[in-house]
Image (cartoon, rainbow, N blue to C red):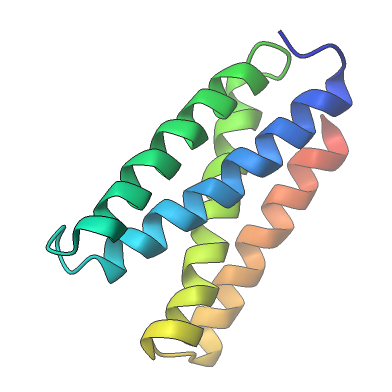
Length: 110
């Protein structure tokens, strides 16, 4: 169990970053056709879920899950734009900014 609330938030941050890794490596694996990227996807997903579970020992489930998903969604969207030439339209960037605002709001009110 995380010793402190700040430890739980650090675990949650790492879990969210690992979500970005598995989502991005899943895309890059071309439907699990590339073995090394498939292994990376599975390992990062497992580690992400494990750390999320540890963080949830100290954080409310709604807050932890929303922040985890938010980090993953924003990170995947940014890397999609940078690595996979996905569109960076103003409305898309605005929606990503709203996710960031929601995650920050949850962090500040937790």
